[in-house]
Length: 108
Image (cartoon, rainbow, N blue to C red; front, side):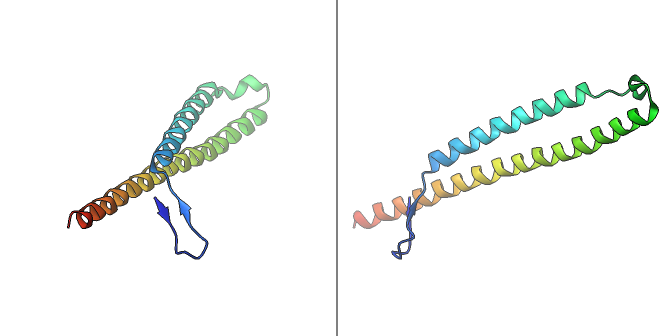
């Protein structure tokens, strides 16, 4: 679909490429979720393993904070997947509508 105002700002959108990008983002989301689950699985719940309670408490606090940050990335990836998928769908719908409009005009 070619979009522009004849002012030199024309650009072309390929909905199939947007759909492909959404799929790649979805795979990144899945990979990130897997890594996050692995991170949670590797966290040490026994603070005494470090030998000093303050070190264990600091490690636990770090893990908690880091996990919260990782969750933000997961949420951002999920939102990107939704937005790119929705954009691709809307371009496809618009392209179909425009094509149908031209088909009806040509049939007259």
